[in-house]
Length: 240
Image (cartoon, rainbow, N blue to C red; front, side, top):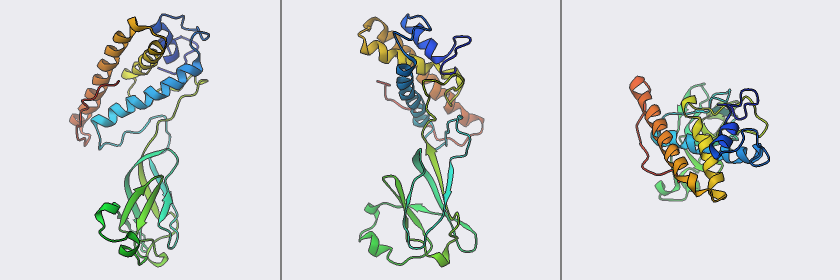
């Protein structure tokens, strides 16, 4: 489903209003802006349902046109590098040595080092470890110019945030399998009904959301049987 289908009236916005018993074009009762705000929340929830099921598979929003790989220059003696905009988690970090070979860095945390980090990795050199700190990735030891390739020498593989809807979108669809797009309009309808005290509709919406959630997780789990290297981690949590 597109976000707002102004031609055939089959979009998420129209479906949300229909679920609530409104006219599909009744923007005075429920505006596109209000639907959009809640839709992005449910978009993220749907993606989280996928991640809960297939935690080590790099799900990526199909609306994004670039691969979830970022490169940046290494600076002599600089350990701290800001993460790319939209990065949610680091999957792996690689550094290119002076000979042009890429080396995979190991994740490390302060709890694993029994002395001060600055003392443990006092001497600059070829980075061997990384730590994710806030919106940065910190390399240990700090890169030494003579041991690394400075230009484009740091490569990050990340999981990314969704490509959000805007209230004016008419062609954008959710970036996951279209069989399950309706979970978003159901979620938006649930939020509106809950806010407006439409208690007669809440249970129905809740049951339908839970059913689609299970279908999403079953669908993405089955991809493992078709050749995708997945570790199945089914969720036992309810959506609300």
